[in-house]
Image (cartoon, rainbow, N blue to C red; front, side, top):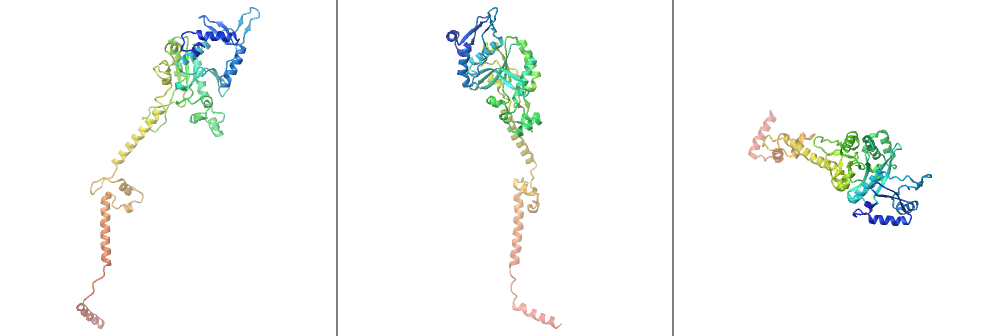
Length: 405
């Protein structure tokens, strides 16, 4: 509580004084004192009721009441144990808040995610920090009390939950997904259940998941991560884009994957949650949280590569077409696009003339033909010259002579 409410204070005096004041009003009580002498405070029944009135109208869920029960024989307080796992969860939230990742009221614990078979996967911690570039992040805090394969099963359940359809999905979509389970990959995320629960992440893929390991060794973390990367590949790994330009596209399709990052609580406490202490499954280096969640080899790169491949394909096709462009047998000039089309278009041979000459030479041929035709027309239209009298007399005599014969 001290780190969540006063992350910049080096001492907890102000928080402790406020808790003592709340205790005077019977709103909180000390449940136990841990071995490191830190006191664990919980709400009383009265304080729990006041908290519900204050927080639930704002959409903030209040944890269950820890009732105060005593052993009838010894008089000792029963259930007065504070789970170390819960301590690690709240400490993780405090470190995120201290780094500016999430408002103190932007954290929620034990958030249920119900699967199709009725199983409920509860997230240890959910943070919403849009101002820090993390609209939503699910966190699983592991003190190495769980086997690595159990974490793989958790990852699978979050992946399955992210593929569920929204309750208001249309009948056609529901029928499609039921008939072909793989069809969900083609359904937009806006039609899925997770978008009714959480805001858009601003990145490709499903809701991001973070594993925070606490009270463990580097060797154990490395072994766990190795199992997650190998056994959980189907759930976190991107796919290859299906593209005509297969060789030119190196970008990855993250649209159906769960972005998974991990760190340790010790690193968060030593360096801060805003430092390069997060590593993404499938990557070798540690990054800041936002860099680890980003996909530099994702959709934006895919669009750039497709645009570049389209341009290169157009240049290649243009070069091949230019190499096939005909050359005029008469003047040696290349055909224009218009002349090329005239000589190759269906039925164009009737008007194209000599298909082996360019447009200019064809125009010369047409001009010559038109000139010759015009000359013939003019000659045919010119009347014959009249005959003279000298020429007519002999003709008449010849005509009379012919008639006598």
